[in-house]
Image (tube, rainbow, N blue to C red; front, side):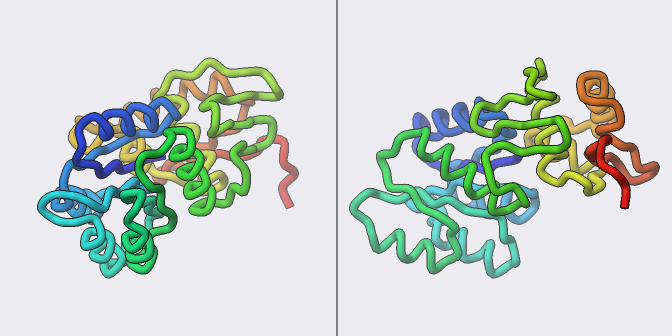
Length: 224
């Protein structure tokens, strides 16, 4: 999944980015409200961690502008522990959840997983497609109970396909969730990662839809 972290305090920002990346996600970061607003307008994110006390443009203004523009990605706001008014204002502005500082990173990751589940069809932390199981808590993949050894890019690609299983995803969509905003995105490399995944997953799990992209299916499912 692709997550935007908006936090101006350098140490906390680095900790958030590291923890979320270690959980198997692609992470972008913004250090002020203006940069956050821009990224949220031009890029697609599966969720946002948004501090409210931002320089240049405050977090509530950013959130209100996103919602007014129809940007509906799940947003977890970070607030000062004593500022209950901020929590209320954040939810009224369109936030999906909030977390008071200071917080335990494991709680933040759990809340983030919950937001991602709400945004998709998955009701639990373990996503299933046939014999493939992706555990979002441990960032690992099992096939018929046996652990797979995947690179971080292979894991992120499979997670995106699992999140929207049965749907066709273009190479461009997949590359946007694999690479950072300021990196050199080459959608052709998606073919390489798909090829590697196909060798590790049950045969027929990833279908190519000519001219459109790829989709994940359960090869053992009986067609209606």
